[in-house]
Amino acid sequence: MESKDIAKFIDHTALTAEKTEQDIIQLCEEAKQHHFFSVCINPCHIPLAQRQLQGSDVKICTVIGFPLGANMTAVKVFETEQAIAAGAGEVDMVINVGWIKSGRWEAVKADIQAVLNAAAGATLKVILETCLLTKEEIVKACEICRELKVGFVKTSTGFNKGGATVEDIALMRRSVGPDIGVKASGGVRDTASALAMIEAGANRIGASAGIAIINGLQDTNGGY
Image 1 (cartoon, rainbow, N blue to C red):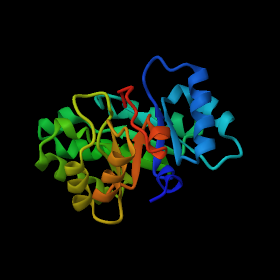
Image 2 (spheres, rainbow, N blue to C red; image 1 turned 45 degrees about the vertical axis):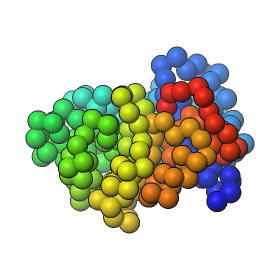
Image 3 (tube, one colour; image 1 turned 180 degrees about the horizontal axis):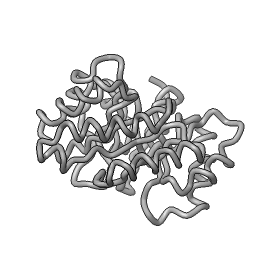
Image 4 (cartoon, rainbow, N blue to C red; image 1 turned 180 degrees about the vertical axis):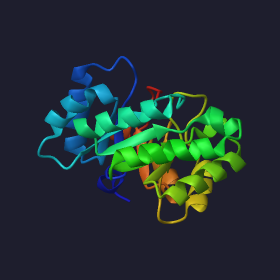
């Protein structure tokens, strides 16, 4: 696979709190230059990104209930509606891990369904935060997402104790089947790691190291 092919897998990401407007402008310019699939940014930056990306094929992805997933469902719904109205084409919502651990699977399902409805046809990715879940919980969450026909299941926020692993990507791919996307995010920082995730079943990569990945380099900055 050539670098230009990997580029179309990448959501070029800037989600840490200190990112300035200039950082977002640079992110958008890099995404256009390297033909990344999207920029993944916090919701407040959507209008700026929309202006910067006008006329390009780079999509805007944003995050909902980020990074804990513990917002009330109504808040996630409102946040989603506002993000879509501002110009986001994809939304990555964090699942309610606490409800999973409490066995409240119907509440988990209703939370996802409400955000899916609010997305109004925009692509919804559900962040499982796999480092906090058992294998059985990952499978159950994936089965719910498959039943609801969300766009993607996603490994991680990149803000917890672990990120994407090849093992979890393979498990998620088996659990959702061929028709739902799988996004690897958190700790994917070089070409070899990205290719391993794709081989395991990922068809999207969330990374702040997108340029290093497509250039065959190792990004040593840490983070998402």
